[in-house]
Every structure is written in C-alpha cells, then in structure tokens.
Image (cartoon, rainbow, N blue to C red):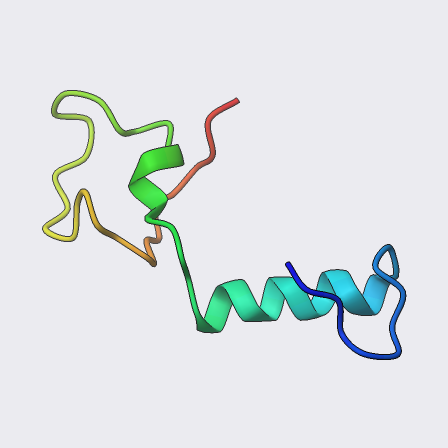
Length: 60
C-alpha cells in the first residue's frame, strides 16, 4: 500500500488509513480467509464473494 504523504509508513496514522481504506474499498473477498469456508459450514447467500459478513472469523 502506498504511503500517505507526510506520514511515516510504520505510524499509527498510516495503519488507521489502511484499515479505513480496506473498509471502504475492499479488494479481497472475506470467504477466502474465513475459518467457515469449507463444506456446508456457511450457508450465507453472499458466499463465496462476501466483502462484509457478521459471521467472519479469520483462519488461525
């Protein structure tokens, strides 16, 4: 991800900006990284292309 002008890459403002950008402009589908992405564990109609999901849990 590109750096915000005037803000250090490792700064908290940069991380906040990257988080906000992911919330507003998601580039990946959540299902690809969800621990419920197998068999019939998830029956949501958005699957497998969900960009927002209340049941999402990252794989560990």
